[in-house]
Length: 477
Image 1 (tube, rainbow, N blue to C red):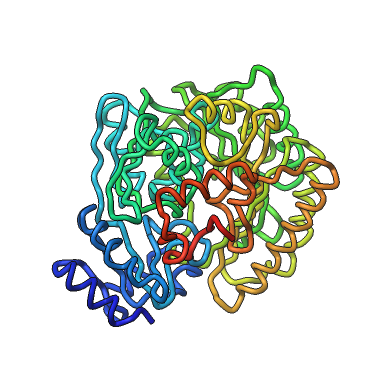
Image 2: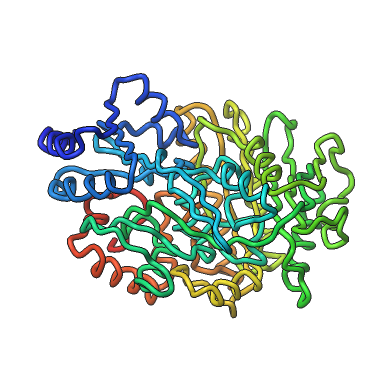
């Protein structure tokens, strides 16, 4: 339990601070509002909600005196399911949810770290603008903008972190600094993939662009067609004239709501206001499909993100795991076969929904990262095109944790080993989809890991965000 000395010091320094103690109704509401129950299982002694960046400064200055014993976590929207990445048992969770605000300027939008992307999109839509952000309106800013982040626009604009022009960040010293191409440029690059290791970001400034309606939605179809979808995805990624105006995501999995056999889902988008663009035909005109569940249409960015949010579950048990492979048909098909072959033992899990989802990192995305000032992720254009292999699971009961997580670990390890034998495995692990037994920082490569470690030693010489904030993925393990 967090020490009485630490709590007393914080409450003295933050006499008007918003501290919520365990055992209160507000505490229960906040702590149960994570995407995954694996995070809500953790019970901090207090939740602290700063109202201003100055309160964040005070918290850091006071609490760092106690980090040898007492620990804290940093929460934005709480959408990453990795246990402990944004919550902590018996410590203090700093919940940034009240640090809101969306300020649109020429060529950029300034976003408070407590915002959700839905609010951002609503305001940008009204001005005919877009931004590289979450595909779900419920998503928060920080996890995606600090760990990589995939967007509807990533084929054209790169990772979400590549679009951050400036981070306003509270350092371990309590100093508030800006990190951008002109100020603290090494910190700027490090934060693009560095997670919660370097400070508490209180505002994100992201590049905007003109954006009208897009064509997109969901297509449900049957497992025998999935190999043709993998082939179509690989062909498009290897097309030297591949469009940068597409977003492609294909999945195979199981939900009892859809029957007793595996089902498939495509989520394709064309980023311009063109109905039925031919480039999407391979992903939208599969037959047979469930016509009643086809939602392809023209829609705004806000509408697209709201549709994605409505299809996701909340306040359930949830876990992600991932690896990265080259865009190779045989490798991806083998991965699909391995995954579906292991589904039977968990089909009886209550409210279970399980999927293997393939999301491309096209060459255009990898090129954009370099052109945007670089990041910490360690991906090389020469390795592309690549595909993220994501295992995603939702379920109801804690008693099923071992079965579900065991299935995911076993399937992912088999897929990884198979890809390695084919010489198609890439070391990169996408942090937003990583689970606690994975090491995305190490997957960036030693050169990038050492850069991050140097940035940590420079901007956090006492290791406040290494020792005091143990959750997430650390730099010196």
